[in-house]
Amino acid sequence: MANVMISVKDLVKNYGDFNAVKGISFEVLENEIFGLLGPNGAGKSTTLEIIETLRKKTSGSVQVAGYDLDESPNIIKGLIGVQLQASSYYPGLNLLQLIDLFAGLYNQKVDGMELLRSVNLEEKAKAKFKELSGGQKQRFSVATTLINRPKVIFLDEPTTGLDPQARRNLWELIKTIKAQGTTIIITTHYMDEAEYLCDRIAIIDAGKIVALDTPDNLIDHLVASGFERPREVKKPTWKMYLSS
Image (cartoon, rainbow, N blue to C red):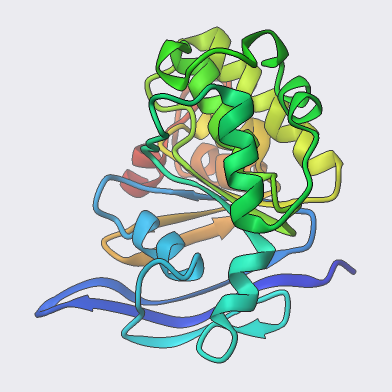
């Protein structure tokens, strides 16, 4: 049985009187792609940012690779890679220079060209980030999460705004990263994306987990509840699940 890489228990996050995350609990297994789905404002990004040590929790417990978030946040920072919804990079530096900069921050020796080759960007090595297409920017952003050779990477809506081909290219990159032994947590609005990538998904609504299972089992639940789209299409959204 796979080891537990991330354990979240009774996680709560309040902003004054507003309860953004309402006591959620879940586990992510080693070398799993785990998806968080739900509408804007459901608590997905807040949950990720707490695990990533970027935001303080109100209560509950979080462990990453056996390390407690309250006791060892700096160790956890060294074990993870984070790709945010929006990223900014020094505008005057090209991609190789940016990789060298990040490698220095992590005190890591990195073959910049090899890293760019792994995300099919070696031809853009001398280009500035602003000169890349949307899909290329996302692939580079994912590449920067790998510089410190993390055990876990977090991808927050990585394909939002991309055209279909760029989305599929990024899906294949994510699959390749998993095949190399990395645990991945991804947030997305797209059930087809979750079905293709994720081993398990949690659907979050209004700060609570309303479903947690494999994509196939959740789709089977939709079919059993009267969802009439043919079974072989299998492209419902999280909204269909919430209404079932």
